[in-house]
Amino acid sequence: MRFGLTFALAVGLGAQAANAHPHIFIDSGVEVIFDGQGQVTALRISWAYDDFYSLLAIEDRGLDPDGDGRLTSEAQASLSGFDMGWDADYDGDLHVQNQGAAVAMGRPEDVTARYKDGIITSTHLRKLATPVRPGPEGLAVQIYDPGYYTAYTIAFDAVLTNAPAGCEAKVYAPDLSEADEKLQAVLQEYQASQSVEADFPAVGANYADEVRITCPAR
Image (cartoon, rainbow, N blue to C red):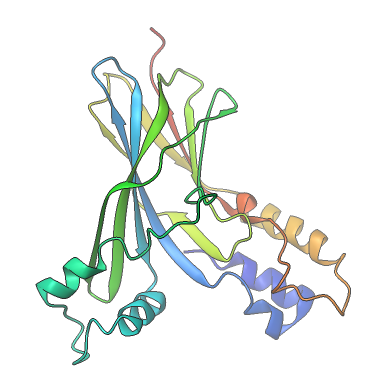
């Protein structure tokens, strides 16, 4: 998980603002699912929440009344889908592009969640509206919250399921120094009377990892 933003805010706005964003930290994973024709048909996304948010979510739902950190099988089952109550216009913070064009994604399916070692990890499947065949230029996958309330890190190697021979996935990290500089420039435009917390700039994309899936030309 990254903390470059904290430094940037601390310099520009003081300690109080430094604690403003992000609020939630999520380690993400991406599974890329291919069909028999070598096209990507779906992405399975995993979210591993930070230990503080995980604890709050468990306590709010009363799933661990004795506080021993272990859930009953019934409590584990009830956790599934806890984070899937999406608004109609929420995109799941998933941003996919093929040849520079946005790829439309379906709503979440096949949801799971588990609580282990103090961490909630959930998964969900997102089908592509139209399957795409990654070429040498790659299919780009990013997970980010534009307003940076939630900070995502792609913390695991991408998994390619049923991929044709020669396909590969690489994770590219952003330039955090550059992202901090851009954030500082935006924050300098705020007036003392403005609430950064209530109107945080849309800088999430600057801090986003990218998974790029490439396959040999056919």
